[in-house]
Each structure stands twice: as structure tokens, then as C-alpha cells.
Amino acid sequence: MPKIVFLGTSNAIPDETHENTHLLVVGDTRLVLVDCVNSPILRLQKVGVDFHNLTDLVLTHFHPDHVAGVPQLLMNMWLMGRRRPLNVYGLHYTLDRMERLMEFYGWADWPDFFPVAFYRIPAQEMMTVLDSEEMSIYASPVRHMIPCIGLRVEFKRQNKVVAYSCDTEPCAQVIRLAEGADILIHEAAGAFLGHSSAAQAGDVARQAEAGSLYLVHYPTGLFAAGNPVSEAAKRFQGPVTLAEDFMTLEI
Image 1 (tube, rainbow, N blue to C red):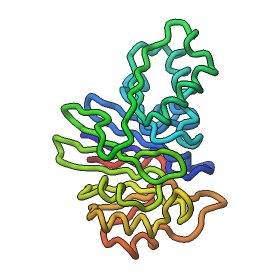
Image 2: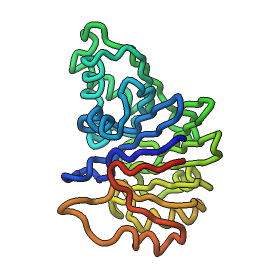
Image 3: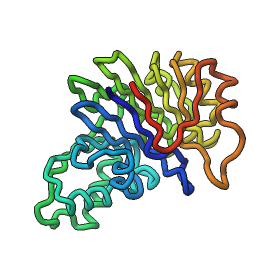
């Protein structure tokens, strides 16, 4: 049975129990990591996932709290003997910078390094990221401070849809991306430049007619404030959940 695993749920400033927001999409044949922070292999091990089985990495945008773990992931995979290719997807803006970052680490000279294929996604709505027998993933540009994508995952055998806003202000693109989704995963960092509040996430869920709403990328630790669930519930009548690290959603 496919599932979504929250490997982290905090905004840009994590605390002891909340890592920066990143997700794992688990299927029968595809294992997709959405964003990559800190030491990803440790997070994968904690949820019982063998890093050798990771097939795809989607990078939503080039901010440190979403991509800082990529060099660590690639290096650790190499040192631990990975030989299987890894597919990496993102906007031109994101992948151009990621490749330049890896050049600073001299990865071209790492002996017997496994193949890494970069796939650049056009900055247009509902672009196909990957398509397999079990799932299709689509990306749309959203409204952040730098080029950024939200995602729509369609699980074909289960006829279920999960949408992820990533970092964004409320915008029509996210509403269209999440239209009719069974689950909407939406950020709740706050109502400021490039981000959304929990109440605004509720507005998006209502307008998209989503089945349920999970809040991520919210302030944690010393910066936690208010009650995000109740704020979202004032705007959206469906189930609202504050996602926590390592929470799993069975699809």
C-alpha cells in the first residue's frame, strides 16, 4: 500500500523534535524523496527505509531548509556503496544551482560515483515530473520568494490524489494543483512574503474542495504560536491535522 511519510514538518527553523519540512512518497516500485535536509539517510533509517531503494529526488526550490542535505545524501550514498542511478527533478533555476554547488565539492572526481540524472521541469502548470504504472507526479509553479513548485501525486491503483503546496503565498496555481485532492498538504509558516498562514491554508483547501488538510512548515519550538489547526478549521470544514515528524499517511 502506498503512503506518504513526513520526515520533517518545521518551517526554516527546526527544533529538537521537528526537522525542516520534507516528505517521502512510498510506492511499490518508486521511492520518492521530496526535498532533502540535514542527514537524510538517518531519517530514512528511522522510518525503516533502505536508502538503496530511493529512486527519485524532487527538489522544490533552492532554499537551504529544502536542499541543504543533498550533498550529504549523495556523499553518504556513494560511501555506502550505492550503484543504482538516482533521478533528480526540479526547475532549471533549482538544478542549475544544485549542480554548481556540487561542483564546489568536486563530485566529478569522486571515484566510482553512481549515476545521477537531472531532469529539468518547465516552469508551467501541471508539468509531468514522473509517470509510472503506480503513480504520476505533476508540478506547478507557486508563489514564493524564488522559483518554487508545488506537487500533485496521483496514485493510479487507489484512485487517490495528494497535493503539496510547498512554500507559497495563497495563489490560484495551488488551488488548481489541489483541485479535488483527497489530501492537501499545505504550509502554514505565516501570512508574510512567500508564505501562508494556517487560515489561508484552510481557504485554499476549501476552494480546492480537498478531502482533508495537513499543515506543515509551521513555526516550532520557541517560535510556535497560536493554534494552527483551529485557525485552519475556521475556513475549512473538512478534517485538519497538524502533521508531525514521522507521521505516516496510508493511501
